[in-house]
Image (cartoon, rainbow, N blue to C red; front, side):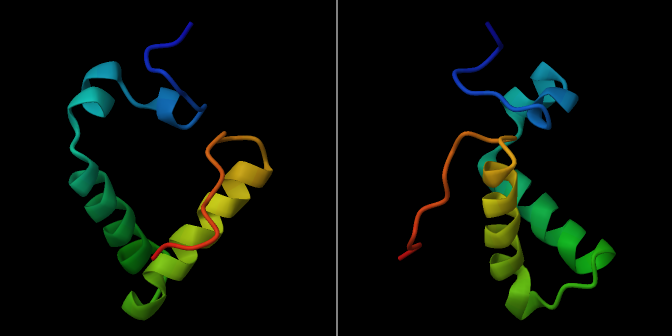
Length: 72
């Protein structure tokens, strides 16, 4: 059994302390910052790219959480 209720291989690359103590807002800031600064994504497309990546990770079996059909 893993550290948390649900785990994925990417999450396991982070230490237990970092993952457990990093607020969700900080993870969001890190993801957006990375896309804007290292992936040449426009600010207007950040959410689209994150949704696409979520779907890709789910379809590859990396994360069990299926993205919702709507984010309203």
